[in-house]
Length: 500
Ligand SMILES: Cc1cc2nc3c(=O)[nH]c(=O)nc-3n(C[C@H](O)[C@H](O)[C@H](O)COP(=O)(O)OP(=O)(O)OC[C@H]3O[C@@H](n4cnc5c(N)ncnc54)[C@H](O)[C@@H]3O)c2cc1C
Image 1 (cartoon, rainbow, N blue to C red):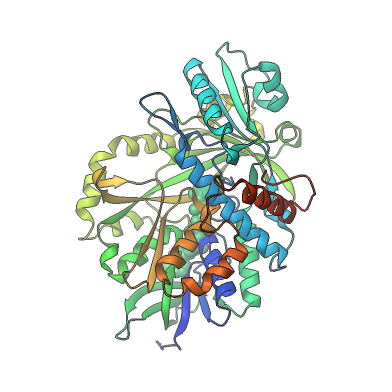
Image 2: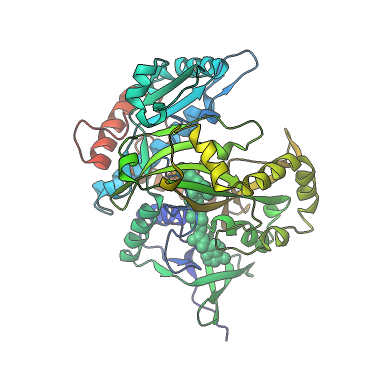
């Protein structure tokens, strides 16, 4: 049986961190708008946003070496690092606003202070790290970063990594104490709990199967109750496709011109986790290394302390892999069914270009646990197999599109917001830097889709995010103010900033 429901102002598809963030922002800006959410799983934050499906790094470019590339003249380009750092601080300001306004509580359940470190081995890499340190530590955004190539200092910083290290290769690291571990799953659930109290109609176990435009310019969604099989049609003036890996298929169904010539390439992830308290107690940082030659940027190896459900554990990875699914709970036909007449040439071009990546990913899938342990031992020489288990992480669907610089079928590693020309529908594709920059990305969606309302909304946005529209790097007084206030709100401990 099929029936058409009353038109709502907003429909959010998917209950991940992106829809959670957009819904929360909109409820603060226009509380009177009615919002519906459809999520095909039984709870919020069960796909990529789940705490075990991502690494939980509050990406602020404090440790990720792929955000600072070496230019041909040998200097280090820190422009991407600055951008990501400022974007993460947009998130911390919004989260602080939510805590201070008592819209969410107990920030320590989703954000913990944790040193962020980069570690490299070999002469050439140490020279690169030193140059990167010099370029960053002169910038106010990265104040407090330290560098060391002194083994005694490194033993103090990373005892587990230094113990049993026999190689004579030079080794160096940078450390900054203002990094964070973020439980995006817990945050997503908190935001949906809050939205429920604001009368947002959240329908779990409801899968969106089709989206089409109506004659009055709004959108009609065909939604199936996954238990009963019943289908209903829901209409909205504005739709956000926040389906994570599921977004591409839904975007294609809209038929908007902006959805053409775009494809997706799934990359799966596997982590190794250690719950042995003796081992866990010896490490307290996120330590990012350098990606292996030929490896995609999202498979930079790192060893992280994680705080999940009041328990500390260690996570190592991710090992990239290949699966044709676009969601962890997706279908083996996702990749094939994403190829349409409008993107087949783009996909074929990417297929030809990315043969080596596909080969790399397939090799990664084939690794045995012992082979993965060998990679872990490059970080922890004394790692014992019995202390580590494999956990399957989320799927990332990298965007493939035609670009001027890369030509037809170029693989993108960032996030793409696709909107219809009239702003009535938006979709988020891609997964990096991901959840950390959710607030910045959702503000971009709002700016693109509600240009008329922006003038009226701007004062409220600035109340929630004091640095909105400004560069923190160029406003030292504001930077200091933001650090102090976010530290107090998110850490709840005076003089122990989340971010300083
Ligand atoms: C291995 C890995 C490591 C990562 N590490 C980090 C990190 O350290 N830091 C960081 O900031 N980011 C990280 N990310 C990225 C981050 O996890 C994602 O960017 C973010 O979680 C995406 O949120 P989302 O809301 O877009 O998608 P999701 O969390 O995947 O949510 C999408 C939701 O939509 C639902 N859905 C899909 N299709 C439909 C449909 N048709 N109908 C109804 N519902 C539907 C899904 O069930 C799901 O619940 C990582 C990702 C991976 C995979």
